[in-house]
Image 1: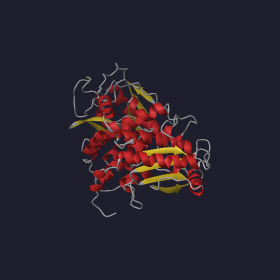
Image 2 (image 1 turned 45 degrees about the vertical axis):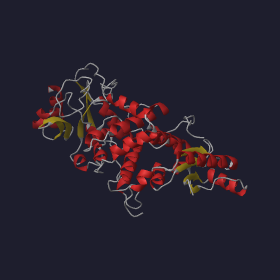
Image 3 (image 1 turned 60 degrees about the vertical axis):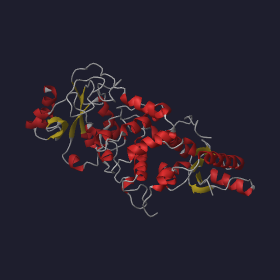
Image 4 (image 1 turned 180 degrees about the horizontal axis):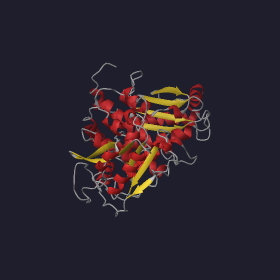
Length: 141
Length: 290
């Protein structure tokens, strides 16, 4: 199923929001694999690099709106790291559009639906990520 | 440089320090030297060929140097920022150091060269230097030289890269990084790479391919420069250490150019200043977040 998208979401807001979208029976693209983390500041840039290495076409990183973090300040630190990562990925030639950063709260099932649909559509237009690199993998996974 | 030699001799004879980390004339250009004997102080020099950032020898990873005892270190204004960084991040104690600041009017790109400073031979980091006189010092030597010429090469390279499409940029970095042999010299030379265990050396879980595949090389360099975000002081040790001449300075400079305006930060030699990635403002820009 093209494209393959991985979502790193925080437990307290976006995961609950995605759950709300599901229980509300909102229709959305089925391409997103959700990975639940304790906080958006748990997202190590290596998660995103690794996801792309292993054949992901797009990544969603989502957490609580600023000021709403369960741990008070986690997403403020995360925001700084994401800003640098966002710029660096662009400089190294990864289309910045492949990574969606968003804040989705526990009550925003609709917004999660929008983020998923919009990202899937965007990645469809961009096409598969790094076909060259995938061919160069010479080792057992 | 008589002043420097005399000061070093005085410090060593009085026993204030056990070792003086400085520069000497080697067989192929200027190289770092560790003077432990007051009789060897005449080796010490300082001029435009003293390119190396000696702060890298204060890094706690370098145990043999730490074992020598209290050190005096010769620092240029730019190197003082590394020393401040190490103090700030609790890697060295201020009291365990004697900092010999030297006023500097720019250094050469090539430590083995002996050219005059022109806009072609001067290091790309020297243009517009605002720290010709280090603020963090115990002793300050030399006259304040005139401003160094500006070498525009690096800024032009970054601007040219940013004009390319993402696919072209990717191709450029693929070509550059596929040469990487994963010797990790960039890490070893870096004054601010001080993790006890590097993520690149971990095997459980293995985050980064240990062999020199393009995939692993990209992940390694991406991670390395991200870890340097907010620590970078533009010393270019990584680029000089690279046996494959990969333009690592471009990556590091780009990240610094991204961090500095975003978080209103400039690398400084004030050990009390904040590290930008360790603090936040509630109104940080988030134009890239939807």
